Length: 503
Image 1 (spheres, rainbow, N blue to C red):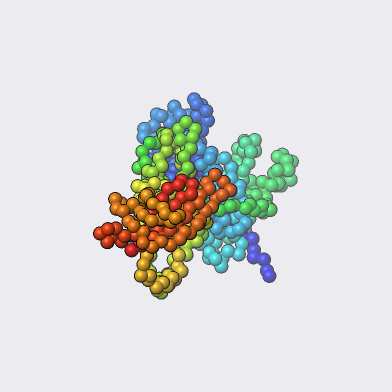
Image 2: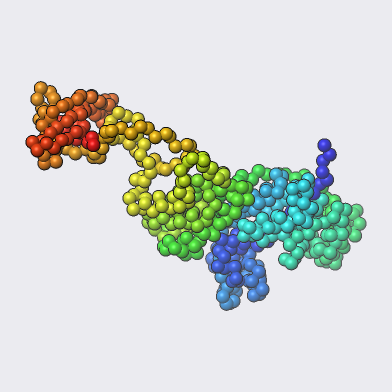
């Protein structure tokens, strides 16, 4: 099989500290925002958005200089948020090629992916660049994409692109022509080399490429050969791909402590939307969401929401999180939010032809959450018998939706036992080891027929030992009232109870 010709795409994101903080805060998109780094009082601007740059702010300004501008939003740099966004961007690039290399530097995201052979999936290179930019926009990041047959040409061209040119494709063999008008700084030169080129009058890549190789090496050393190869678009590179795990996580740091749940839900809406977009891009849905709140004082508050079936409905997730947090509120002010989601299949529920119509899964989850908020945790679900012979022992399990055919109805019995839960205490007279008289609900019944006893017991190996005998009796009062019931006699507690009534 013939190997396709080399083709590389470079994803270049400027002002990463600012974009990472603003992607989950849509209310700040129309305001000039700057990001400060460093220890007070020597803080300086390290990144900003476009509106701040249009207001005249520049990188390196001190906090005092920034405060001279009006209506400027000042944010603190968050390395954790940048690392999380960098992982998301690598995940986006990994959707177009399994071979990607991270070449990020301080304040910039640079990623190179092997695009050879992708024409059949994403079309020509320009269409591939458009798809990559759309994927970046879907996660709230603006970046540029350059495509070339040489890795370094794609990276250098991305450095020299202006904000008005979001994508560029260099035809094979025209690498030097594409780099020629760019400033020489796009080649990644050192400060000493930059000063030397300024003294020589070398401003563009074309001027550097025109210099003789031997003379340049004799003055700058062996690194000059690398610079000439970069200027001609011929410097070789061995791609070192990395493995990017698919982890659905979003986190946000708050500017001030938060106490109101409604304000928290506003931020959760944007974070959930990002999780859904990333899961949907891989044809998946959110199966569970774990929210971890970083609290004032150093503590944390963690809750997990698990609906019946995986879903990508943002309103449903918001409602479930709201009901859960209202029932289990944090005990301090909130300083940060972290969301972690587990992906699940998006398959639809297929019912049988004769299966009963089930309620919509999302509405059922909300209804169960509302009932749980009223009756308490662990009191909503379906009753499941325990593995014991003790009467009435069961536990509650969450409801599960099944597509199995309903079982055939059994033949109705003329008599049924109506269980009393809890069993009602009664007084029983014994004669010859059998019940002869029952005092139940202010009436006295004379036993006419008695069946039993049936002995049961268990847990003899621990302190919760139990044992009882059960009788089925038929009693009658003086005014011909009939009682057909099941009596239970506890050997340990020495008391009699009516456990059920036969109708």
